[in-house]
Image (cartoon, rainbow, N blue to C red; front, side, top):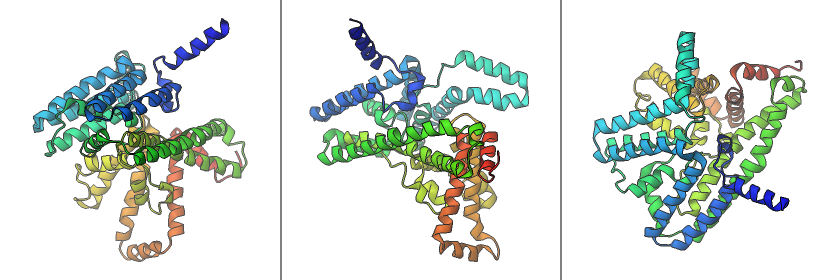
Length: 425
């Protein structure tokens, strides 16, 4: 009887609502494995688009409800409904209001504590504390699941509709664009003009090649995320703290440094592979997100290969609207710094993320400008073009040292970077 009760408790735990701690491991939960094991075969068996799309929408709602809960779903329902309705008007002011709503929602749910405690708090401590306390009384325990992805995709949608794109008139298709479960948590960030035709294609028929390619991609993603990245995470948790790092030999420190870079790549790209593979098994092609970024030989090339859906989004909806490279070198550099500060902040409400973004923004500015230096610029550019190995080493060193800023608070990152060049503590 006791054994049976324990078994029943384990079974009910699988179907219990998710907690914020589950958000970082959604694809490798028992609930998701059971969910995918039911949804994918059922979708294939239904065959007719008139049945497939409503079924897929119900599956996406169930997925979102399980991992986000009612409190996490409600803001997305409000923002999504407003985005859909305002997009149908195709009016400039209405679309701008919808974009503002998404920006404000993202700022409120994800950045209220950061803006109150860090930004306002540095201006006036008492004001910052009061604002932080007020925000805490209004905010849920955790931000709505994937609020960054929702906000970016809704902003993209309204921006393109305002520029003349045909809005999604069918509410079912808009719902699927909004909460398509494979890409809901970790992307890639979708573009509706690409997603909707691909969704329609998948609804008409899923080929054997789609399932085969998708299954291999999912397997690759699980290998990267669960087998490699999660174990590297355990190693970093043990060896990565500064106190432990300082007691290690110099070769061991450099080993941990490499492990951090590999962990970040395999974790991010593994999630993307799983999402892209699951979507392909539904006949839907999501945009690629990573293309061997550690093979890049320049900072520009690195960002053409790293988190490509985010980079292209920032380019199209932040950098270019700010003026891009159309107003001289100084303005181009400023626009780039703003864009990359936002890329950093997108990853989390902390100064070390902002600093990481600015670090890459400065690196890109230098790489984009050095060839234009008088006298030395052109010959230096020609020399580097003939030296791919030094360029690769410099690029990866720059990117990998940047991961220390990304991974650790600023002071700890500086301490660890210094310990890589000294054998002492």
